[in-house]
Length: 132
Length: 315
Image (tube, rainbow over all chains, first blue to last red; front, top):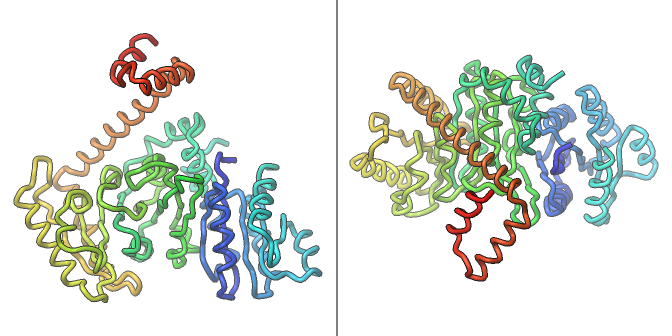
């Protein structure tokens, strides 16, 4: 792993609200990380490709559309197929409780709902990435 | 398997990994660079620089699409600033390069400056060489949004494009030293905005004045064209691609291509030497001794130059 954490922040799917993603990107930046921000309407394939080219330690997905049960597993599977098993995946957005377990089973490191403090997110990313 | 042979075989994951190692600067990166060096020297390295918000990323996106249509593979290095306070960075150039996703003939890498001034990161030159060795025919380097003196790109690129936009300053700005002087091609982007014609004219005038006083080493036979684009819809981009091809032909026919390669090799050598010698000296002297000299200088007991002489002679 590099000396400085690199994190990809992406918004898969079709909803157009990226304020949460930007707040998190800024918080990670202020915590000394290099944050690659990809913007709106990313397909899982685009996210995997960017994670590979940018050699990131973690990927943060912001999803408000309700399509997380399709999009998130596709990103995780894509990362595995690209040989990026070491990349930690975080999800932020509105995720119903009954889906949280399934997403964690699928390989999501942590899920951050509305109202999560940015400090919590920074700490979680740091901890997960230092575990290697 | 080692990284260098994998990169030469087109392994993109190995390429991405080596770029990280180069950014962190260690022995493994240097070994791989040594193995890749014989495979460099083929790519046309094109720098794109200019003030923040002039549309550099959007133009790079359009140029990359144009090169792909012409059958050339494209590596892109996009540099954004590191925060001087936290060491973190927000690298957002991919937002404007969505069109390029999914194309195996394109590789995009975002880089943070990590404290380096001059518009590029310390490691940008090596990253360009790795993309060159990996076989990309064109390497586009987008600098951070620069002011007037961040001209490192001219040492790294064969062809430097300076991007301007209407309404950023009067014609006196165009007369100042710096950016204007490193331009091989000038682009007035956002040409649909009011003032584009005046901006283009001011640049033409400044070029004309500069031409009359061209100093030694200035390639007076190449007159940088001033081109207008609307990168957002691709207008004028074909003309920029033509100008890039013309500049390359000019560099090759005039012998300047080889000249620039040699100038870059000299620059690389001297910088690496400087870094290595400084590292060795500091390691030999020790941090405590350095701090001791710092204290003495701050107390006005000794001046900087005397201290340097003493450090070098008594190590």
